[in-house]
Length: 447
Image (cartoon, rainbow, N blue to C red; front, side):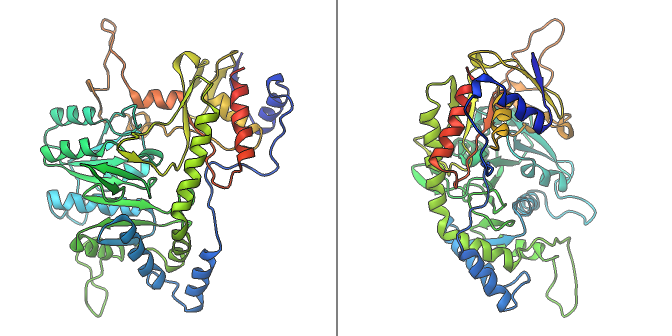
């Protein structure tokens, strides 16, 4: 029979009574999807800020992480901000003003303008377009990296030749096809905002040269949110080679104060600067970035090996042109191994079929044994707030492709990944023995 999303206690009892899971006991401590990993150095720099009374949005911690991140990424300037969304917002606003000029204080700088955006991403990539009164046009996903499809982007430029801004995200720490996307944008005179929030430490080979994500767009942003590869508990950063752009972001992020002995403002500003306390946590995390990446990679590889006998595949990456940071390990179930599953807006149904499974059966099974997983990010064009926005696939308009008399192809790569995929626990504190149990539970879901 179909299973409906239920309360945790009921769900746990159901799996405990299921003969497929006999002998498995819940973990005493929860296995997280991706939780902060502290090392002790964080406290040193936070305490230093407190002892020296640098607890505002200036201080040595901020200066130091800006210097070190710019050096690590290979760019000239980094501006520490309150969150990755703030960095994306100001990156988007900078691009819009370069393209269309300064807006009235009562209007966004993208008013009346369309922007091509990654479809499979978290909505923080897209919201800044709305903050600036723009209209997002969503570009479908390609199956080889789960990122923006260059062919669909080219089709979008054919349909909307006036568009001059593209927002590209690297899903789950895996770089997209940036060489192709860059070449397309250059031909059409478009600027790129790079959302590298999830991909700090990932690399992409652009025209034969390895480049860090965070330096692949004209305007670039990273995040230090609590679940990211390194964290400040919050925080983000704008990255650029332009001193003018860096100075503008510093100004905007401190309420656009002018150089006067009183508070004077000539343009809209924001309270977006990073706290020196948050910067202390980031400063303590930075030396461990490469270690975290290696730990995440080992988790991915153990899943890849441990699940190789099942009808599933791991989230893919271009092994010739990229090196992910492996922030989240994900899997997608082969079509012929998908058990029936249906989703509403906030609940779901699925059936248990021998030899098959579904994302929600696996997620419920993991949750029953105190393990966190998640569905794949729901594509933006399927979100209620954006259902009226244009969606472009490799075939063109992705909306209304069929009617009572004509069968459309129904191509929608992002929706298919969402339907068949899930995010696996990828916490770098998870032991090999704990991960082996996660793999065992997944195997039993297919019995």
